[in-house]
Length: 95
Image 1 (spheres, one colour):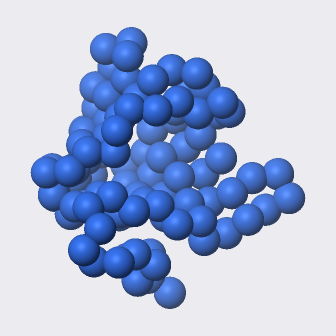
Image 2 (cartoon, helix red, strand yellow; image 1 turned 135 degrees about the vertical axis):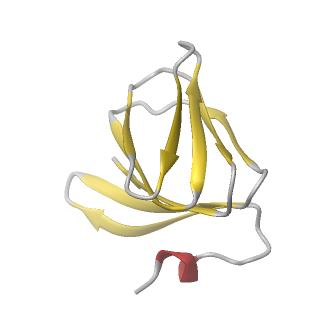
């Protein structure tokens, strides 16, 4: 299976759960080039994995990191963050 096939190609930002566990969920996120996943917070720790593409992760604590295919970042709970796509990108969010 391919993560990109979970998303409509015309949506600039799309999130689809693709695996639910007893104590967590995996979500596929697609962000098209130049688009932004707007600022938000998570109530629990999360891991964001860049499957393909290139994104810039930023948070309100002035942390800024470029993620390329295979890179990941641990997301701190209750800290506002956002993600900008530099290329069409596929991400996996694990909570």
